[in-house]
Length: 182
Image (cartoon, rainbow, N blue to C red; front, side, top):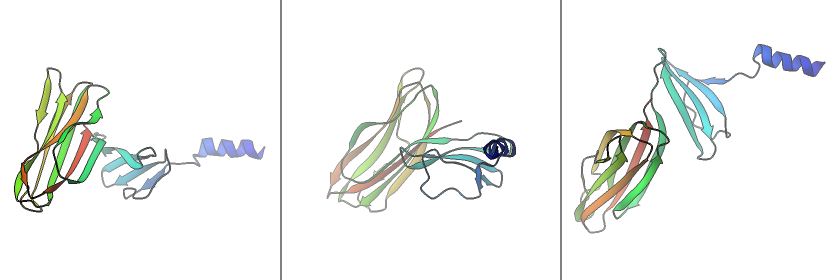
């Protein structure tokens, strides 16, 4: 009888409630762990993705409007050459996305430039954009940032880099965040 009462209490009184926090989780969670984040007018439902060892979330504000969710992050350091077209994300259904690029000369050479290209397929045809300013690879710390909005069909979104005129062994770092716009 105690067991039945315990189950009744759990179901009726909500004993196992969702954890509510006021700061974003910064610890390693358990696969499937969920929590609710509330700070000012921002609300987020976090869940721990045990496969990728990252916290994912869906965000909305007090009026219920949605925002973006990150679907992929690329972080590369110490790159020395161009990178051919590389799949970042396979779009499961047509939608709007935003790719944000940060590229940085991490070791100066005596020559060279860097460009990053994002490519996708929209309702009409294949498209591409170079959202960040070209980086001069002769000065450590030279960088470029930018974003591109993408209307993609169910296809892949790729990135590629082009290093041109390099001399003196320059290196670069690249970070790309791809978000699904809600």
